[in-house]
Image 1 (cartoon, helix red, strand yellow):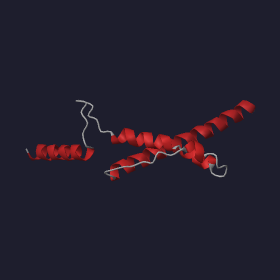
Image 2 (image 1 turned 30 degrees about the horizontal axis):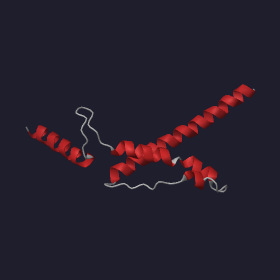
Image 3 (image 1 turned 90 degrees about the vertical axis):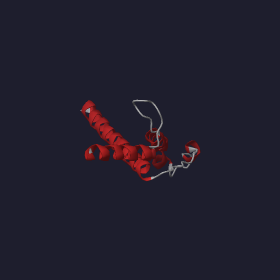
Length: 104
């Protein structure tokens, strides 16, 4: 019974972790898609966790992972040529090329 309960708890924690990761991916994608410039504050989380009333909530947020994902998604590097492109300009070029292809 102990091991069965241990598996149930591990499964529950895994589900919570996956839910948080999914939400972070969705939020970071939305932030990157809607904004031209993104500025993030460099927080001293170690000092913020010293407040025992907020420590668990602050730890659950995982701000570092969110900022890491936003940096990863904001760097718009072409997989074919390796050049960095502005994502809006690159999207406009792709739309223009598709429109010209349909007309021709």
